[in-house]
Amino acid sequence: MGIEKNGVNIECVQGDISRQDDVDVVVNAANSELAPGGGVAGVIHRAAGSELYEECKDLAPIDVGECVLTNAYNLPNTYVIHCLGPRYGIDKPEKELLSSCYANALELADGKGVESIAFPSISTGAFGYPFRDAAEVALGTVFKKVDNLKNLEKIRFVLYSQNDFLVFKDILGR
Image (cartoon, rainbow, N blue to C red; front, top):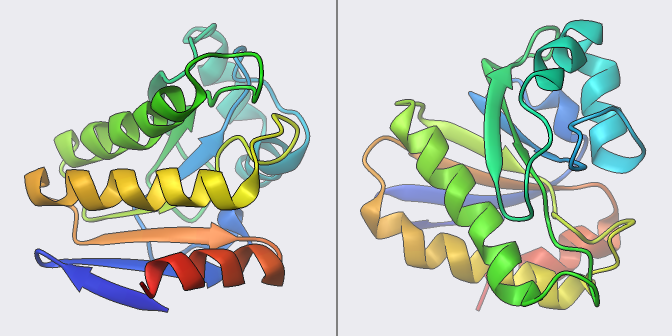
């Protein structure tokens, strides 16, 4: 499912974020130490290999809403952008902090001159952000930022479960 806005394809797919071989950058829903963990961070670190964490150690810790860029190592991509999303009910204001994750990642990728990026749904796993609310923030942020992008041509949201995919598809289709 996808749409075009200002020359940029915005799409959502069901799949594995570590297997997006047609995008330049994948985004990691990271923890503050940029360490391997559960969820998206675990999947990305396992697929990338131990070199990813070795590079991450010197960049940590990061703050909520902050993004950092590393090489992708054994992933089929060029880079990984690591974003620390807000913990729902703890990090305030959640909506603004979550939006800054997506905005900062887009700016970082666009500034590197890459043409494509794939996002997971940030903060919706262990960090407890209600899924539909998070999807609204993610897509709303992308729609606001897309007019200012110079290099990005494809923005993809990769959702692991069918239910999550259907939520993004519904919002994207409006």
